[in-house]
Length: 209
Image (cartoon, rainbow, N blue to C red):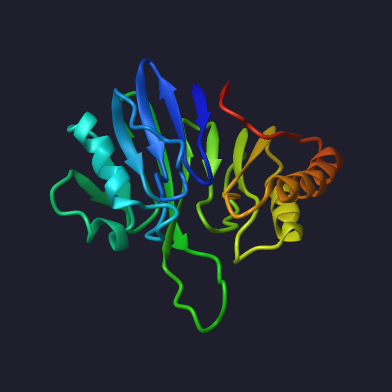
């Protein structure tokens, strides 16, 4: 599959000329809706993962695309095809198999309500936990690793990488970091990756996985 990384938490996967878009949020300022989109995955309802205008732009180009998201997201979608994921389940669309794990967003502060969150394994290859440190009950080849957020510290990301132990990991969810902040975060995570035998590096545009 061809993996294309956009700003913050957004990325796409392409196989057989068909595309999945994951978490098209407001911080994905470099994202332009592609053609041949068969599915949109939204892990939760926060604006940096779900921008209704950006989703609409994708659907305008791909009217048959299906949105997979928690009910907290699909409740806000009235005119597009949407599937509410409320429990662990597997969905198939085009050349993609999506194994969803339903859960909760990581706690930011006890005073802030915790929203629903999806983790997803795509084609038994790439695992993305959304805004959580959900440990999957299966081995992972490629991990989209949350690297920076108000709800995490870099040590937690390092521990999560060590627990999941994928073959390859790349950072995501880091638009709030400066260029220097990304370097510092990558240095810490890469130290743990080397300890665990994980190939960790930043994806600047597109890679094959």
